[in-house]
Image (cartoon, rainbow, N blue to C red; front, side, top):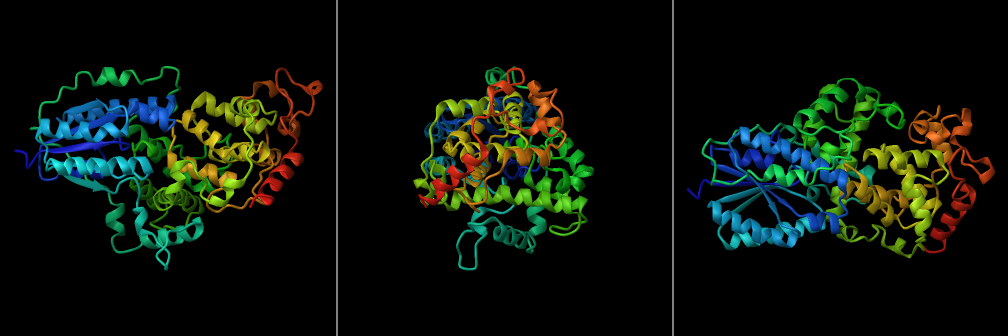
Length: 480
């Protein structure tokens, strides 16, 4: 019967465990079907999603397909091309399957929100109900406001308000696990899913390393391993890229293979239920979850950042350079600054980069080379397996001093100092810059000043630090 048929629209939430939309759709033993709409032209052509993320999505969709099959739920993989075609495709599917309600988990970027509004209108015209669930964040962006009712522009007061909101009466419910619903044997409609595996396989990339195994079990195991021990040393060790000291859960969170609720539950369990006291490592990691939610709020509350504009609109006057040759050297890890080059090569080889190094390399591009931050933002999205628009845009604007918490006059990292502090023995550099494997002591951190100092094929420094720093400071001072 139409009043019972439910459809779950999976987006960036490739799991059944602790999934709000899935649990709600399956409540009460109602027949359920599932759909994923692939918008390749939108993702690749407009959102700069690259092969590492597409491959990771495809592998996790394969796991999701298998889980749905075990639950007796038909799964349809549809090509929509662009977001503009999604409303019509979903409306037709709902008519074909006699769907009463469509469930999905909310997303926060501008284009995704516009797409969802159009879907709601299309479904309302044919009498299909919509239930939208908060699942990607612990607290919906519109719930955290200053006393004046304004959204926060600075992270530290946002974090305080975020923690306060988590302590409210419904805190336990908000963090609690959503039951893993089991769909009824009588699923809605008779979807043909034999071609799903073939369609997914087309978006697999054999050249991508599987440093991040797909599926809920892999994500849960990674969280368990981290929260079981390493989280306690997270504050002291998280900035050292040669160490296995971070959770490396960002791909799973960005694709929704694990819930942010599961992450917070694990942290609280490791910290005797404390949010901002107790184990310093746990508190620091919870703060990273807060940063993730802060940047999603920025997308919603300051919508111009979705359109390639700086958060601090006055910084549009900064005269960014558009030197394609220097940009390419940065992309390829051939700047002559060892820590920058090692980080870029880690990204190119593995599809992932250590978070401290994301700041170092982003600041090098924007402050040392004075190249437009949007060039780097796009390159990261194309290369990162955890490519996430909110966090990527927020991080790049933070580094470029165009975003929140912007401090242009002293946020100019010295890459040599960063290297000496966070890779003191040069272990990380040698791992990714083999041309320097024979250099010892502090020499491993130093850029080469001239061609006669070259080691193998390693290039001389692309720019001198003092000159670059003064150039960046002048560019901001004279144009703000």
